Length: 206
Image 1 (cartoon, rainbow, N blue to C red):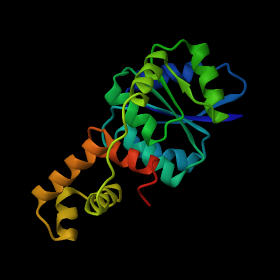
Image 2: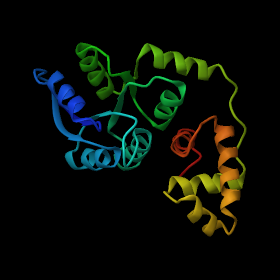
Image 3: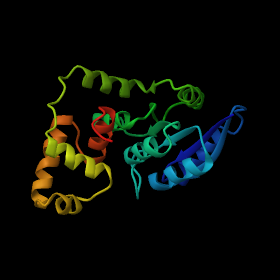
Image 4: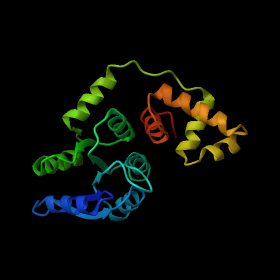
């Protein structure tokens, strides 16, 4: 039996997904969560195998939740299920550790197949998401991070705010913002969560 957790901030979506698995003998919806923070907590508490993860949610977004799950429950597979398929959505999710990336208009039978494949550790990508990744692969890789940039990124990954990082490193908050922008440019990402995900993917972070 594959135990699934549905993480989405819309109750109607959660109900619809639960219904899609109602008559599937080898898949059980073990629980639901309305945001990423609750999703991480419930995934650990319920001991699920696969998490269906939306991306844009309150409290903690999907990318950050994927990173957190990778730290506290690395055996859990995450299958992103969202309405967004732009590069700025697909790449951070995959870099953070998502096993698959599907859109919410995916037919139920394909979603069921994807959950089974994700449980086996196989990558499952919507065609549009696969196209975004192919475009990224064809680009040159970024430059190496400096020691200070790595230090800043590690503190951000540990959950520190810009102000807290500045206080710990005895430099200005403006300098932290500058260092982070350099990190974003070198890792070819757009925000903190994506930078942390890419940092883990490249083995730059503890």
